[in-house]
Amino acid sequence: MKVNEDIKKSKILFDKGLKLAQLGNPNDASKLFEEAAWLDPKNPKIQFNLGTAHLSLGNFEQAIINLSNAISIDNKLVDAYGNRCVAYYAIGEDENSSKDFKKAISLGANEDGLMAILDYVKTKRKN
Image (cartoon, rainbow, N blue to C red; front, side, top):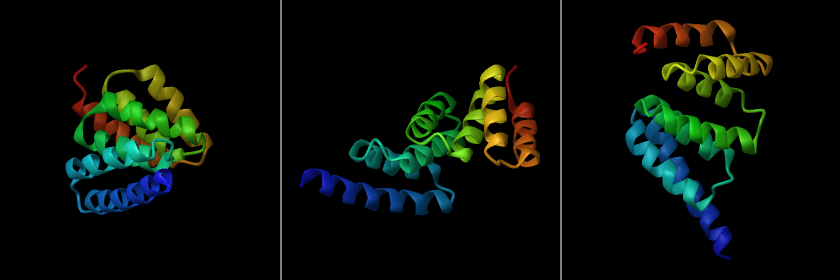
C-alpha cells in the first residue's frame, strides 16, 4: 500500500513542480521535483524535469546527474540527451557534450535549435 501512496503523492508533487517550471520558477519547481524523486526514483519524467530545473538554475553537475538518471531509466529521451549535452558543454566537457549532441540528433532532436543553445552557452562559458 505504501508504494501506491508514494506514487500518488509523487504525481501530485510532480504536477505542482511542472506548473511552477512552466511559470518560470525553476528553483521552487526543483524542490518539488526532488521530493517527487525521493518517492518515485525510477520515474524518468521526474528525473528529466529535475535535471532540467537544475540546468535552468546553472547547477550543471546536478543537472548531469539527474539527466543521466533519466537516460538510464529510458534511453530514448531525446530531450534528456539534448539538455545533458548543454550541461556538459557549460562546464567544458566538450567530448561528453559532443557524444550527447550526436545521440540527441540521432533520436530526432532539432539540430539547428540545439546548436543555437550551444552557441549561446559558448558566450557564457568561462573557458
